[in-house]
Amino acid sequence: MQLEATGKSVEIAIQNGLLECGMKREEVEIKVIDSGGLFKKAKVLLTWGEEKPTEFEEEIAEQPVEEVEQPTEETEVAEVVEEVAEKKKRLFDTTRLEARGKEFLSGLAHMLDENATVDAVAGENEVSFSIKGENLGKLIGFHGENIQALQMLLSGLKTRGEGAIRLYLDVDGYKASRNQTIMDLANKTADQAIKIERNIHLDPMNAYERRIIHTTLQEREDVTTESTGEGEKRHVVVKPIFKR
Image (cartoon, rainbow, N blue to C red):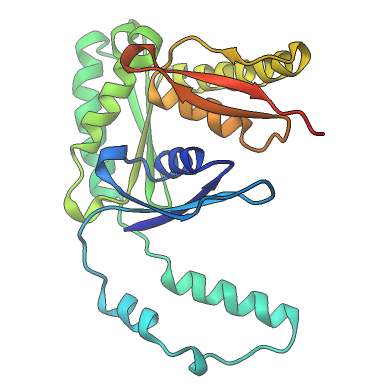
């Protein structure tokens, strides 16, 4: 499978791609398509898995350009682009993962709260699981660390043919609340960095939370971000950009 991603820098583009495909850095091959510059974004190509294309995909990929009818109006251009994109789009059946994920998470949740419930909502190539109940703090862990660990275990339920399906997990709405807190922190820190005209180093965060900081601020033109440090000390630095 392949995914193109963009960002203010090559590193941010890579992080955006990893966040979108739900893969780890060591699980993908990364090719820099465009290193970007002052007025354009960097672009990278992420490749993972060894799954061969289906006969239909090969047929679409090998179709000669001259066989496609050349549109003459802007509306026709949009229609052709949409049609080609739709043909190349591949959807995966999430039914098995929904059932296995709910079974796995229910077993864990019921050990802490016999009345806990597990819901699963499927989208295009993704499934979001939500656990609700009482006394589920152990499933959350410090700063959501156990949620992240459980999400990795969920990924272990995927078969080779389900590799492109992204899985998400939240417990009692903790992750949604934490994500919003981190996004608010990102913007407040950016505003402060501009105000004091200095770089600001945030506290150490895990890779998932660092990606939220990068993604939240990537569209701002007045700041840039980078991750620095090693291991548990790795954190995000928010840097103001001053136009001359």
